[in-house]
Image (cartoon, rainbow, N blue to C red; front, side, top):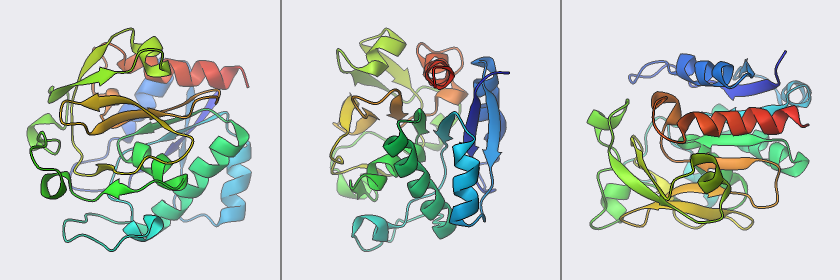
Length: 233
């Protein structure tokens, strides 16, 4: 049996249930997806965490800005306090224990907030001249824009590309990068599109949705890297 990958659950929302795409990507990478339920208390969640080999933080709604010391923007969407608490806790545990972790879209933002970073609450309102990151036409496999990947980064090694064409379905992004993280990819408007925690076995996060782009360069490599690192645990 392959490594057990804990996959956070996105509550039902108008965009649909994407758990199947995440799980499929994990299975294709020879991992075993374990869906992590909301509603558990912290001690029960800790016991579940201890039995996992790696963590996959999935996409979804916005993180409550109280977690990074700001007041809510009028543009805030789909905040789930219970999910925020569990995922921020999960990210901290994974990084403290050097358990492999992959963050996708909201998952990237969770990792940044968990370590003390802050977020742009609405790119369109706060970043003049920004690209259309929250275009409903690019929520699936459609390409929205290109991101430039830093040389020497783990992402560059996984993707084997200096730039990647990505989809885009987020209206928030990293503002202040947390201590201990490195921004390793940006879009043309300067928005952080990927980050890593150097020195960790595998701690990578991307702002796009690779699970929806199975044929694009680097997409499946992100999940393969996670399960390989988990298998060395």
